[in-house]
Image 1 (spheres, rainbow, N blue to C red):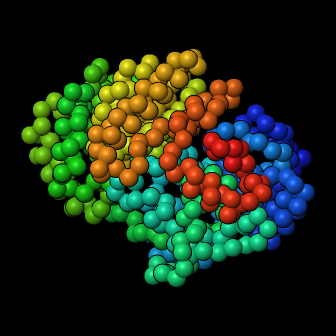
Image 2: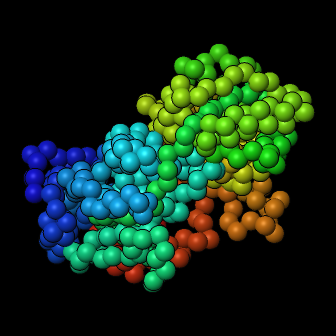
Length: 427
């Protein structure tokens, strides 16, 4: 175990002493000792989203998970891998790549983001449209609970159907239910080729073009829309977006002959749409654009960042509303209905008005399709000045499922010691 002389401030609170356990046994002991003393436990990794949510509400101990980076088991022929949660996504991809495999998921700043952090924050990336979410690839998980015990859920094989998938409750829970220690993923073969094609689309035709893309005969893995202010932040896209337009990026990953056919087919389909113009395409040299799309939620130095989640068919309407909300840079993953945005300069009153407009738009769109929508769209603030943080600003009005989340929290962490204070109700 490494007890560093350093301390850390978490969202303006602290300082918290930082401890880096070197084994699961050490981690279990640390958690039990801290909770016995009545202290909170704050798991940290690459610290890419350490300020996500409300500020911590209790004193406690910061657990630096980067001491747990081992490759536990990798039967490549079974296409599964088991690793400790302190390993970064970038390092896992290098390990898998040596066997011609990969985990087809994105996380911002993958060279810093630990797997535990990626699971805890659960930010959808551009490839979600083609491959699914983190929940789709987690087969099993080991977690240290509030008694310092190592609990296991799921397994290490794809055909595992025993028990409940309790481990999936930890995905997106911000470390409030326990400390993720070990994860088993299913993986896929690396695609032979990847290509990204860029079109410029008039704003007034964007909804129609996206509707056409949802009906395409091709199989894109990403379908992203970049507004002009966001395009100016990406070197390969700079200068391509014009006023009253947006860039539409469609990505393919398969065999080279299949990708080539899909590019040709897509061009024929979009040629029938008005207001859309082909700009160019990249093959392997487009990796910088793929990575920029994945990193966009955590671009450096914006004053405020948010994520909106709506139905894919509603994406264009959210972008239309966003046009009138100040100097806003937006990237929308239209295949999954996820919209990310940044303001670099905005005052608190204007921010409240902008968020209210976005949330009202998402709610109105949900009401229009009430018969088909299980949950309304939501707008969540990822980053903003600490002094501005309130439950209403960060999360909006309470969701109808909040009571269920509180019940789960009470069952997993009745004393409220894991990362307390992050969610709206103080847990």
